Length: 415
Image (cartoon, rainbow, N blue to C red; front, side, top):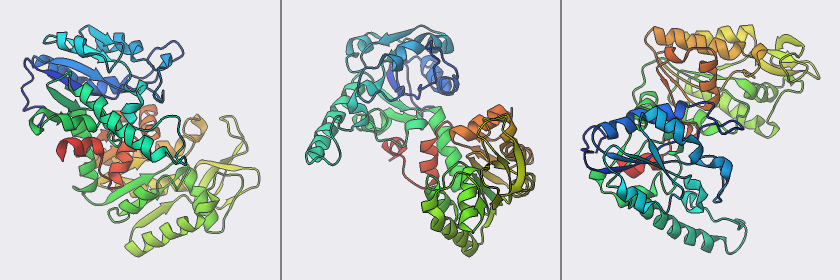
């Protein structure tokens, strides 16, 4: 069933969203991107004559009631965004009466799902090494089903629009779908767009295909790198992982970040790229700093000849040119992870060069997908969000999808 085909008139819809928004010390939202992302789905249901039950998690309260993670803090913001008053259920598992009383056009927001350990389905207060852990895990899985069943009982249909948690088999993201038949469960608009974006990158590739993987560690990206190796024409590996590759090849990297236990892995990736005919682009020069702060002294030097006491903090001018060359001619582009410590303005030039090259390629007809928190923050910082094809809302979910893994939140609905 698709959201456009479903008749919401007179029905109650329970919708899983990702309202895990950042709050300041006064409980005010500092970035409402996730709320805005869910609006098309939520407004469609209301406009079609449905009643809305919205559920989400916030933070990591680990199965306990923690005031700073209460969704009560965002009720006013959600009301303003929807243009209608939003009721609040103080306990997500005891909201049956409030849900039953909802009329068409009315909205109920449930309290943080993760106040209940059953949401994540992990035993609390028992170590994995404990002999009793497996029994506790079985008991928790049974409790998780009951929790999901309770949530499902509030509504006639289920809509999952939380791509950010689609890689988790939680009560509200996957298990709940078992209590609705195929005609009464569907993906929301945001989820549909995210799934389509991943398909464009993995199944509908227009060549050349350039992937840019940044960030500090090779280890966190290895699954994606290996899955992409059979698909891409150009693979740019940048950011902190640059120095693991430089050291693996015998270079001197000063006090730069490095995974010393991944040097063999770095050499293996280089060999794989060569064997598969992938153009692997690594930074040849870098901006090095004598301290980890924006005001540090800097110098440009080869990535494999960084002086003692200095650390690589950004891609150098020659590397930026090489990155741009591999990006600007591409027809499919994936970017995950910055080229340097972009949070400091003086070390943002490498990431900005990547963003500019992606924007230029997109202007020339390329499909560009930006995913992962830091890459999204980059395009927003440089004012280029409207010059790329798609910005994903899901960090871990997007990465697992690109690794080729099945996302439980999607599979629960699409099979």
